[in-house]
Amino acid sequence: MLHMDPLDQRIVSQLVTDARASYAEIGQEVGLSAPAVKRRVDKLLDTGILQGFTAVVDPEALGWGTEAFVEVHCHGNVPTDRLLAGLEPLPEVVRAYTVSGEADAIVHLRAADIHHLETALERLRGVEFINRTVSTVVLSRLLDRPPQA
Amino acid sequence: MLHMDPLDQRIVSQLVTDARASYAEIGQEVGLSAPAVKRRVDKLLDTGILQGFTAVVDPEALGWGTEAFVEVHCHGNVPTDRLLAGLEPLPEVVRAYTVSGEADAIVHLRAADIHHLETALERLRGVEFINRTVSTVVLSRLLDRPPQA
DNA sequence: ATTGAAATAATCTACGT
DNA sequence: ACGTAGATTATTTCAAT
Image 1: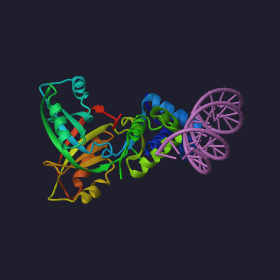
Image 2: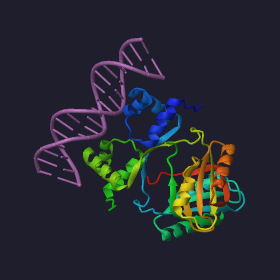
Image 3: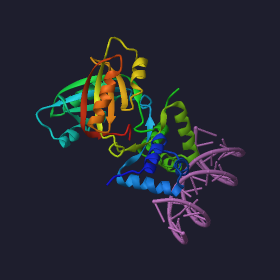
Image 4: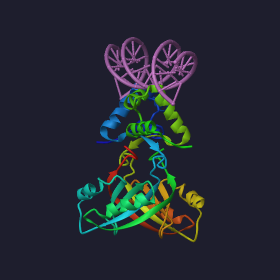
């Protein structure tokens, strides 16, 4: 179903490095004409291998400078779709994962400041099926690597 | 030094949604000409508010389908630059944060499979100043939100 | 599945307001 | 700081291999 040949991989790699690179530029790097690159990119978008193109924004500049990771422990067994439905409405939830181990999920929160983070945590704890949360506040971002350069 | 007016915010928002949108398209959305949009984008890149443009790739397709979060506990006090120097050489480290609480850092690992994850963990534990690690393997990705849509 | 060429569209570099 | 105009470059479509 989804397979990338080496050329696709190099195209994807270029786009990860600079999503606004022209098809001609990419083509020059990988040894293809611009239309050939576009067709491959279109197909990669079609198959879902490429999910889209986005700008990388300094969270500080957006006024979302405070982050935390929260272990979520639920009452009994909660199916993932209910988990998702419970977390989705909270705008401070950047990412969420179901995990092995004691916790049921890990939630990545992003807020404007500590106070905002606190209210976000309160709302998170207010989600009906959530029993207990364990928060870890981020002090600094050490590393933030592009998916594949 | 870094401030965004409402027009900048709308431009950034457009670019987060689609980093390959043309300046003319963005301009139409926000009520500016294409050159005006480009000038603002250039300035946003210059000030570091916009850090770049990247493609969003399905990690499965890259053969990096297994993820884990690892609490890192160090021997005594390790300065952040030494932490960074220790983690940076490991390609499986996608992101790393220094954090409040018991752990010294949280490391986000991405590997091809469980076996690869295991070897990555072993190498992580091999970093000299690392005392103990607590791993949590990701079972599924519930939510992965764009920074600001 | 690729190239090459022609039509269309986007970008860049003025310059003027 | 924005817009318009003109030159340049990129993208797209299509024909052909």
